[in-house]
Length: 339
Image 1: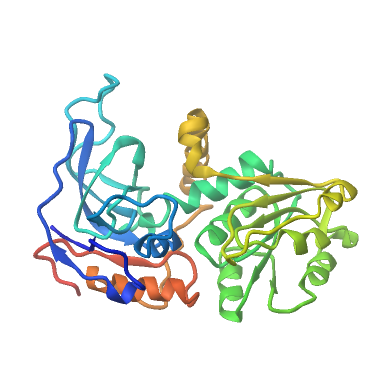
Image 2: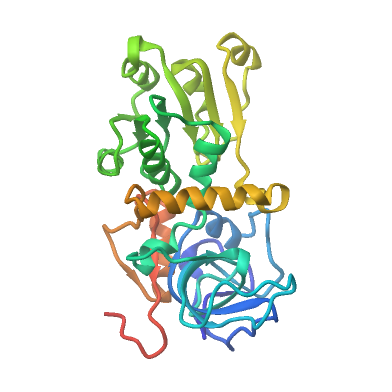
């Protein structure tokens, strides 16, 4: 197989190289998958620099999210259950080693590819879709009529959140830093868009709500909770998804009390360990939206990245905040043309 193997930490994605390696050998409970598309994530950039909380021992293969076709399936699983997928099935998922032509993964790291979806669209769903669904539905209790403020609305989790909020009958106010990104958020269903480059954005958001009462839910993958409190309604829910801005916010807890709001965190990655029954409910909810046409893939289409050699350029576009949605790399199988 071909893969981007890490033997030492690098300063940036431009140092990544593609190597020829032996195919991975699946354990008795693992599937072997031919990768057709790989999705980029910010944690990939941290991991190749040695700055992520989960660092595998050297040597390891970079990347995580992917879509592809099952080449080999387990004959039986340790639990005694029959394997869900068979050879030839199209799947998407996440497992260490997504920047490769082959990968092994256990069943809980895989999902069936939605009917009619491309490999590129499916490659970017495993992290963003359930994160946004669990945040808005499970943690924030979104309902019809809510006003929802979604920060970084043109990003991967942002565009997922816009679609989910709209599907639940909410009014969406989306923020982003450029006009192009605001336009993308609007094209995915946002009702109103506001640039957070303008210092008075909380005031602008407030004016868009009934009688200027403020928003019911704030979806924040950036680190804008303190400022968002200025435009949150009584009984509002402020949802902490991440800290893309880089700084971990400190909060004045008296304002949480005075405004009668809830600040709620989401650690989606831990649900499989702490609350596995909710994982299936979230995926069932997400598939229901996909099947009803209310949720579509968010693949970045301004530029195309084809072949593992284009991973550095794709990661660079992601890291420079030049992209929207999910930046995907198409991975032609050995012998396939890159055209």
